[in-house]
Image (tube, rainbow, N blue to C red; front, side, top):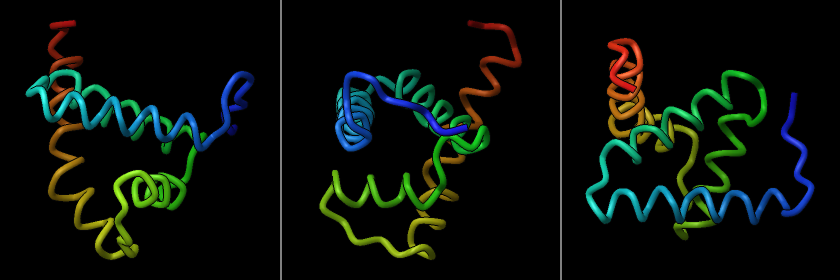
Length: 95
């Protein structure tokens, strides 16, 4: 089920999400960075977004032109480990 936005467009939401993720990364806030990666992964799994939509919004925000293969490499090498770290924290009941 897709997310319905009432007070912002999908593009505005994506820009805010990627800005928040970038701020967490640049400030060294690893828990927040991992939590955001975990959240977007959960939204993909729930069917709110497709991986392609997330890839295109990432490309638009960061001025990239990652194709599907490059995106999958980024997800595998950077985003999945962050997602797994947050899931481990949740599994241990530390939150």
